[in-house]
Figure 1 (tube, rainbow, N blue to C red):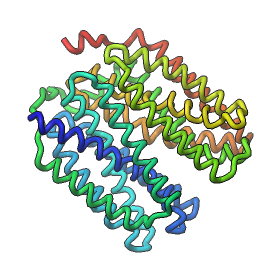
Figure 2 (cartoon, rainbow, N blue to C red; figure 1 turned 180 degrees about the vertical axis):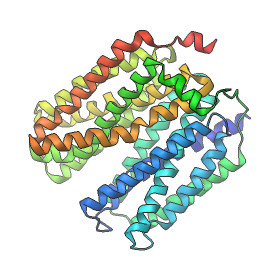
Figure 3 (cartoon, rainbow, N blue to C red; figure 1 turned 45 degrees about the vertical axis):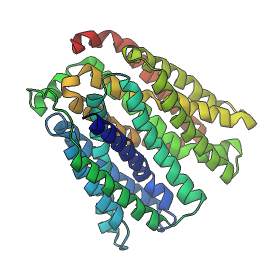
Figure 4 (spheres, one colour; figure 1 turned 135 degrees about the vertical axis):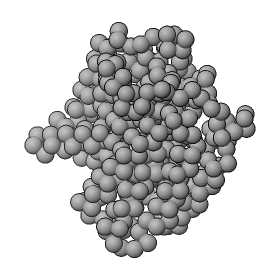
Length: 383
């Protein structure tokens, strides 16, 4: 069984690596396949739709069906989608394939964290942070591989599909020890969770932090070029510095965090992130801007993994459901805040739109600070 745990832990990490690759795919290959801005938006929308559906379904199933079996299905869907993406120029067929890519990675997002919490009873926050570190690593790798090294994206995607198929084999072969399953059905579990004010607070905070991260990744190069006079190459380096800050933060904060103090650490990180994003977007630092970019990425990096860990610890008997519910915030935040930013930028200015980021983080900080008194006791849950 110990070998199963090691193999499935490695498989989970690699699955999240390809989640990072898939979510950055359109941005990396849009020029190669001549997608218009409208088409880019359409592809991202259907990918998020598939992702949202998969997170909901897989998260609900994770409490009653063997998690490796669910991940096997998700891996097969993702491998097939990677193999077939843009083999033909039909926009409608490729939109369906992109939705299936969203379903595949949404399955990874909905199940791997819950599986890691089942397998590892100590240093849970470290494993969740490492899991999400691999998402950022995947995004960094595809950025370097396709944009800077200008490798053949079609060959790269086929190589990715082969590795995902190997992951499918791992999920087919290895089993997990049986865990206690909830007696309530899915709707009963959702009713229980929606009555918990602290879970609702975590959900809202997740929407805000994911939205800030997604919108920053999308707007950072434009901000650096338009408002800080960076060249195009220098602005791309700035985006990589931001991603490296996220990756570094997930490793360091994950290693240093203590499971029993996660709630206070989340609040402290929201306060820190409010400050770093205010400095990044409101103060011109000239040659020191890269430092503020790095620390902005670092400060926001571990917040979502820590929220996921805390939610799973508070409700271990329905970890899949609560984590799946929290993760619905990912596509919601990834749509709402960038859309709000675009509206403010259009009708006011880019500088005014950038105020949304520190204000959103400050709002999340305030919500959790007010609601922490309603958090269920971890000691009571573990007992």
